[in-house]
Length: 167
Length: 326
Image (cartoon, rainbow over the protein chains, first blue to last red):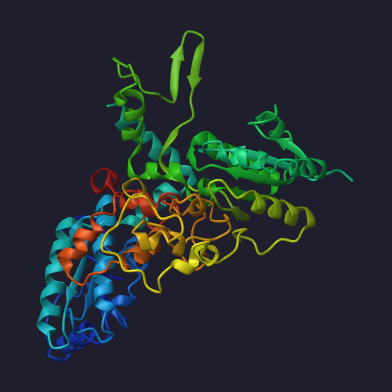
């Protein structure tokens, strides 16, 4: 991967996008065939329905190096499976409260309804989100875990905290 | 032939796991006659130096309870790992991080300040904080280092088996000890409990609707729960659908919802995310504002869904961008 996951001007956000097969993925396809230009920062994972999105997928993406996660589903009332997008909305709403409590900035995880005809909305949302996440900077969860997970440096991490705590 | 040697140790834990061993009642006599307990700080007067004097792998099995959050605990479990052929993570804290693991919502500085300075019962005008080294006229005194992040046992040392529960149910302890003595052990890494969700066993199973639909969530003190009906159908956050069975549903029998101490079944990576998914999908609304209003009744999502498993979760600890990026 060519992007550098470090703070600064050369930081390129890594966004994992879970798009439903029937609407948003088709819209992304349309954006492609229409040769719309947009930020190359989203890695799209096709799922059959936004209702299939297990919240574990979002956390796993963040843990494994994503700086943001975008979820795309059909507009309310348009779900190919009738209710899947409502299920996604309920889970997403609760997941957001959890992520806030865990210190993950709100803009890093986003849910959008994008219909198959809305290639321009794919373009706009990915561009917007890329810029928002760029401003937030890298998440780097994996690196933090590596530092704290290594037995030898755990003491150093702790020592640093002792000094902070002493102030 | 000499009896197999067994060690028990506790790390960041409450002592409930030690109680669970004693709760074997007279069955413990059978255990004691079959094994030789060589280390058990809570009950017997063996010292660390006794363990250090043993040959590597001399101990047949070490049962370790508690999460790992200090340099001393880390040293002790590494020592026991060297001396023991098998290590069993005993109880929720060793298995997934447990209640002490909720400290991962804070950092070390905040915890130490709260405990030593800000707590209402503390008088500490000079704001003295524990430090690793203190020099006194007689020489240097040292204390173990408290870590910034609490870990489960397998994030610290190699673990062979897990006994889940807060504390582990007595029958599972008995079965595990029996299996170890007979040498009839499953694959390494197995959680020594049934791999099915608690609802399967639940005394209230027949009252669970096919698809519970909830307009409101309650905390246990807010409603008088019907003692017969599915707790989830009553709006109580019962985590039975995502929690491993094996506890005999003792909480549900006492009219309290399952809080998830047995952890997830083997198909789940992140218990809290799965629990959150199960609960959220029961919300009975398609309107975003109404959904938000219903979900706002879930007090403390981290403490509810990760009560016993925050260190073992995918996020592991609260993310604090500015300080941790250093």
